[in-house]
Every structure is written in C-alpha cells, then in structure tokens.
Length: 319
Image (cartoon, rainbow, N blue to C red; front, side, top):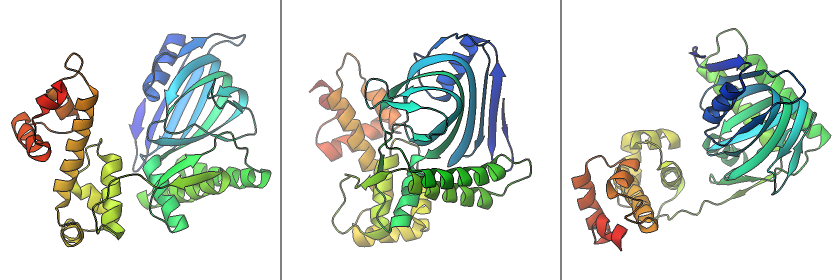
C-alpha cells in the first residue's frame, strides 16, 4: 500500500506468500531473477519505505533465503541488519552483512547478494543529491562519489552515524506532519553523516565542456550530461544551479554562445548516435531510440540529426 502525506511517500506491504514477496522485491529494486528459498523459520515478510525522492528510510523483514542481482542505478544505500545476514557482491568484492556493521551497497554497477532471515534497515539517497552535498561540503565541483564498500568504518564513526539515523528516523518516521524544509534539512544532515562515516573519493566527471564554461554554467552542463536520460527541461537545470530561466539563458549566451535548450538537445542527439552506432538493424530501430531520448516528432528529429552529424540516423544505424 502506498500513501502520500504532506511531504513523504509511505509504501508498506507484508504477507506470507513467497512468490508475492519475490515479485514485490523485484519491482521495488527494479531487478529480476530473485530466487527465494525457505529456511527453518516460518516464512513471512514485511517491507516499509518512508521518504521522498531525495532520501528514504526502509525496513525489511524476510524470513527466508534470497539470492539475486541488483543494480543500484542512481541510488546510494547504506544497510545494516539486526538479525540474520549474508554476503553482498558475491563473487567479486565480497562483504559480510552482519549485525552491528553498516555497509554501503556497491554503486554504479550490478552486484549479487545472498541473504537469509534478515531484519534489515536501509537509508537510501538519490545519488545526484548526495554528490551535490559532497561538493558543497568540500568546496569542489560536483563529481562522481566512489565508495569502498569493503572498508569497515571505525567505532566512533559508526556511533555518530547511528545517532544521526535515530534523529532522522524521529523526523521522517514520526506521526506528526513534517514540512518540506524540515525533511530537506534532515536529508542534508544525514548525507553529511554518511560522508563522514564511510571512506570515499570524488572523481571528476568526464564530460565535454565548451570553452569558457565556468561556475554555474559548468555545473548546469554537467547536470545535463548526468540527467539527460531523464525528462529534465531547462527549467529543471536552472533550478538545479540556482538561476532563473532568463539568468541561465544569459549566462549560457555570455559564456558559451549557445542556448541551454539547444545544448541539452545536442547532448541527447549525441546519445542517440552512440546507441545507433552500437546497435544493428536486426535489434534496433531509429524510432525506438529517438523516442527513448525524448524526440517524439521523427521528421524534425531526423532533420536535426542530419544537421548535426551530416548523415541521417538510418545511415548511422546501417553503417
């Protein structure tokens, strides 16, 4: 069941059907191939998630063994168990999930897991949000956060993390109404606690930047590259860097001589070209790739593609 309050979305479900549990977890984590297996315990499950698109607090009870593969996508998650356990990143950089030890899930790639009879809590962040908080904290440009999920945080760091999670739980999971501002402040404090607890580094995003792009224009372009696969508009870009639409347009014209919507369209055209080059006529169509990247009018898309690359998209695909 999903409910939405003033600023939080609550999803919770429970039951005793093994197939229903498998289906629910596959949908929740956008995965497939989960293989549940009964243990000595009587089977039952419960899952609850409370939060917003920036941060959510999740809890799971699963009285069985579950094996599968998950891709973290655009999320950064920290998990810990109070009962049961298992192994994350099976066959690669394996790490035990055991009571008393919070662990960052592997990020940016699929990983396999093997867990049994767990009572598990998870704090999950939107990856872009966490990278923006890291950039503010370190006074750098936003970059890709890379965590060593096998590193064991020190006892003092874990105590500080647990304290912040308790404070966040009091606000996010409480029964009283919570303002958007209070929820955002809680997410920011918890993000900073995560950065203080778990070893990480920031790597510069390797995106092509036009000459002259600095400050907010550079941040806007990096954001466009990072989120081009989502339905963002220049309004979202302007909001992301703290400018008005007019301010964003003027900054782009002054620094790089191109309108922000034209640059975003060009990034998406480049992504289309990459997919067409990687595909074959047997498994790819120009129309499906164009629509996936937000080009609904195929005639205008084809003309814009030809102007940018000197050939029509069908020629790229067949070439």
